[in-house]
Image (tube, rainbow, N blue to C red):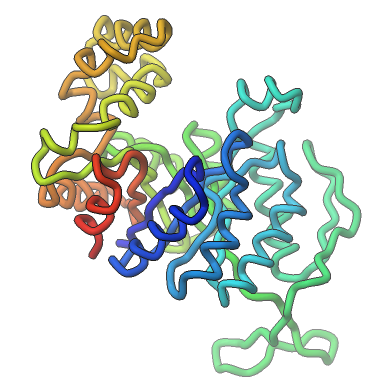
Length: 344
């Protein structure tokens, strides 16, 4: 299983670089930088990281097609790929409707927007023209001028030919879809290289895998082509109690408050207790909030504990089809220690 890590660029970029270098030294495979307008710019952060690391794959986790055009995202990713010697990835989802609407940005047809964006960026990042008349995007012959193309080889290592000329494409940049709902999971499984799912419990992935398999089968793909990724709230410490220090319970509170009742019921959570959490968050009462978070809530929506406990949960996720685990916020009460503890 691949192991990734998420950083939020709400701290100086120098810190992100330091944390990512430590993650790389500790054996992490991917770093995902969140993309929110109120934090430092994701592509600026990725540029600094690309120039100061050597092996770790890097990309936005995740951007969206509403606040930035897929053409601009593709251009940025190709640039990062060049700076990092081929280590760029792209994570793209539907974005947050409330936030985007508050910025005056129209949020419409999220599934179509994400699926069309993936196809759009796949063509541009490989150096091909993209012409499309879709539900969301109307594109006439878009093409990047910066893609360095190389000959495409067949199974025997010989250049593929078309009309007497060698076929050339740019380097492959994996594109991941941020997906939660059943339709988004199914439709993106038909086109994406990976799927990022904000969940940490095997129950959620058992359900998600059903939709992913539907999409894969409908598209005539192999499930092995898709990197099924658990993008999880995570906190590690020397003990479970130590891991719960800091912001771990606050992160779980936001997940509980934002989860529909059907998800809460899936995990046999007490709805009255969950509504209490929603109420405290609505009041901004962060003093009493940690005491309202139960062990069942933590187990449902986060990976928390000492190293052995965290590894067991990650292994359980692997058994239901997860192929990459992303260590998400808060990571641990002491970030650097957390990175070292869960590193390979």
